[in-house]
Image (cartoon, rainbow, N blue to C red; front, top):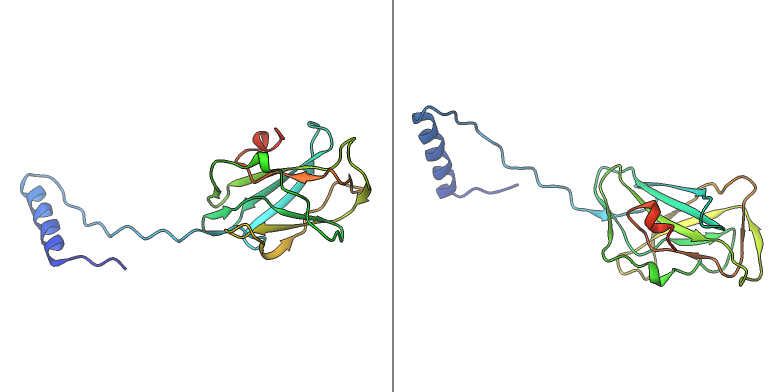
Amino acid sequence: MRLVTKAAATAAVTAALSLTALGGTAEATAPAAKAAAPVTCTAANTKVTVKKVDRPLNHLLLTAKNTGTKTCFAYGAPYLRFDQAQSSVPWLKDSMPQAVVTLEPGEKAYAAIGTSSPEGSHGRQARELGVHFAKRAMNGSVGRPASPKLPRGGVYVDSSAFVTYWQTSASTALIW
């Protein structure tokens, strides 16, 4: 609730009467509604999907769409876990954007997943993917994981796998 001082109320009435006296119209306007405070993006307020891309080779595109009613922040990069892996896929530090990705309702954030490379080892076919969203401090995750479906038949993953930080466009995410 916004409080209006007596002086401010008197000034508004005086201005409205002055407009009316000059032949103008005065409209009463309600104070602007305070926008809802932004929240952290989680699996509860986003829809997460993953798809295979043609280029670059051995990459997937992860998309998070804000399905909530409030603006949300996609902090850092997603924590990814293929199947029942003991640790998450490393974040690609060079992909860190200048600012936190902010998603208005309906907007999307993107992250590229590099799945394998000739330098990788211990490869296997992954059939499931868990996606956790980072907390503001980027020292752990928040909420339950999203479980987007991997492409049919799964995806080959090895020790060289990585994920980029969240980006504002798919093309920026796929640069890495």
